[in-house]
Image 1 (cartoon, rainbow, N blue to C red):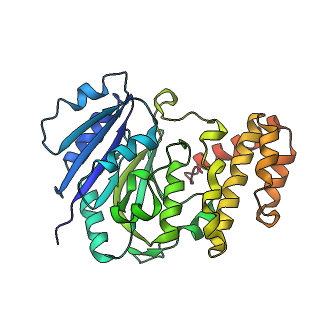
Image 2 (image 1 turned 45 degrees about the vertical axis):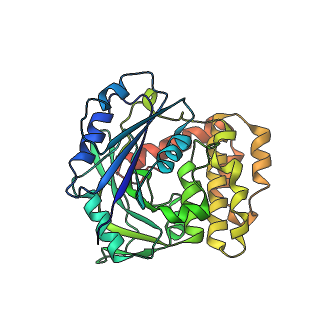
Length: 315
């Protein structure tokens, strides 16, 4: 069975990284793909570096800066194949990534979202993502919400997922109002309609070592650019999926803590709290939200440093 991928790469001022990213695609052992690079109004040398490649599988589309969600949507809308493989312009793949994802598709032909374990690159260290699969199992259909509620994050990253194009007719594309957790917004809509196939073999590398100046989003985005401001779009699914409701609550709570730590948006945090079931709070959540911002921030930063020291998940 021939499977063709449309690799969609949003590009905005990534001249330090895009060559490694693009080389990793062109070096794939599985060659049935096109590469759609969407230049989202770059002002550096990114596009010039891409145009040096002569591979006819590469297509460059330029548009005015509209954000990562809009750039991905442009790429998806201009794709010609049935499987959308997302890749950020500062991440990269191992040479067998698309081959591994093809094999996963063949094993689960009725799934709508395909994902694999990936490796985080942080301070020069390679840190594998935590597995959602049971010991001894290399692949399975999984519910990512079970992992997400336990660990505070979905076991998914944009550079390690493949989306069946047909499911997007039901879910819609990325919401271009959102630039923070915009991937969660789409992933949660997809799993509300379809199935997720997950594999241990992947080969995606998530580059956390990107300097702050090169990141697409800031450390603390305006609340109107955050997914939690639009989470009501999932409400039609809450009655049927209690896990989805709980995960949505947990995401709002952890985001509230992040904004609380900054000492800003006090009124907005109160409004956000009204969206959350009281039973969804952990004791530590209430404790952190009750503290002065500077103390809450000190405690959370200390925990992050401890997690980094022991190479735990950074979420």
